[in-house]
Length: 283
Image (tube, rainbow, N blue to C red):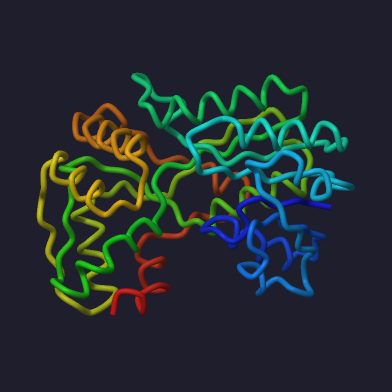
């Protein structure tokens, strides 16, 4: 039995689908069962809350492997899951982390994830860390300004990154959860192309058949926009600002890796293929 946390999110939804395609027996832990309605009849659905330790025992019962995905900045949720996994006799935890943990200097976001990784490493459980960089799906944040203005506002400057398709992260997670030999490994994951954000916009423009322009903005303006949207807690907004400044200074550059191909046997998706698959969202 494989237990998935975050199964209704960007990576978790892809992972659940891929595991079911492989006829794996899965259980999903969700706060709101209605969000997992698409899995009804195909996966076991258990209601629980990672912030409420006493709700996790039932989800862990009989599980051999756990996919651990937490999005908060505190370590309490990870600590709750790890404690419940140990008590239930879980053999192996695959954790979705970030490539920022390995950066020097380490940003606040990297430090938060590093603390969570250390909790798992110190637990005595077998572990695998997945450390992706930016997701291709982050481009969906541009939908509003693309539809209204044909414009993407970027604070990234000329920095290049190798964004990854969440489906490729899920494919590596699937391998780690279902095949031996991944225990004690930390995998840095990326797509295969180094692109500036302006180059991504050019590729997206061709994929959706609509002219788009990139407008450079300052980090301060980007942070103010995040703060005004009230979609993130202030602590995370500040951390995002720090991350953008570090990226613009060239201190967060990570080369493209071949990890996806080594583990899955196929090359990672291109940004163009992701754009074509999701073009309807931008139109």
